[in-house]
Length: 322
Image (tube, rainbow, N blue to C red; front, side, top):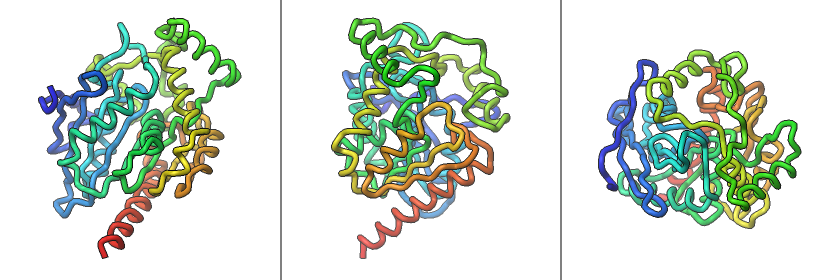
């Protein structure tokens, strides 16, 4: 299975970036997972590799625009579908967003790097959004040392539980999961979301593009989260808020948060950022959660933060070479 070609879906608004190819690799317990590697498109020397980890519900295809921006800047880019997402092995009987703790995710992440590391030139930058940002930081906290820097986009370092008190939500998710009821939906299926009531992006064209991908390829759809997924999210973010590994991360970690955040908890993001020995936090005023799917103006601020990190990584590499 590992190394066999896998599909990538193209839509009129999101064509597959030039030279990109997807393949299957084996994750924890042999789960079939999908990843795609994209070469630089700038025609110059490669600047290194970026491992881009999407958030909950997000397939590789949603990041084609971000991939194009990174490859044009000279990076090799590796993007992957987490288990339960995209075309990777699903964990439930339907499209519900399910999880079974965080350890399999980290095993999958290690298997991803092992499968592609010979094709991904150093220095490496980890780029993770939301759930992907949480799991990226968790991998670093648990001992992953091959990256030279990391940028976390609106990372899931705590959940916004709305009108439900955080302690009650955490207890309910943990209790139902422990009782074997974790596959039940934690959020009821609601009427179809519209651009006008969405809390992810202010950009209508990008919102429509992302919806068109799922309409054209329904196998990419991930529905509402289960109680077990919520329990996973609370556990993973709890490790980052209180565990010993975060202060030991030596590489520069840049966190970019959305100023008008409705999905994750920015107060938790601030607490975790303060625990980093070599971290910085930037908040983009007025931005919604999906920073790499936002308006040009908001994206420009996000990519300035990435470029600053990439320049810092390059300078550190040059100094080490000398």
